[in-house]
Length: 143
Image: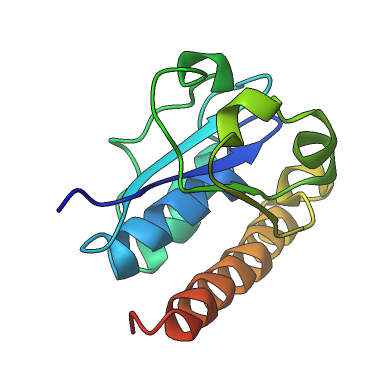
């Protein structure tokens, strides 16, 4: 049986959606095909790579992609937006026939400060995303 497709959407597909993709693949890859995309992709944020490395998850193979690359090409059982802008502007066609969920997380890339402050912000959001993924999979009886 084919695994259902899940896509995480954010504005830039540089941090939150990338982390969510990596965590769902890590914890639930046996149950789902996992993707992420952005409304305006900006490339992978280097802090995303750093904080995911701390968890032993390498995201270097993931790419910052446009949601338009997926519209009409794959059926998504779940479209999960992780920022308000993506939730408001998500193309309806991407989640047609599936379920749209919204899991809001603050944007760690918006935090200003020195390296330590930025890294701390990315860690907070990373840990929130990990907890949400684990809780969601647990609720579905997959963990």
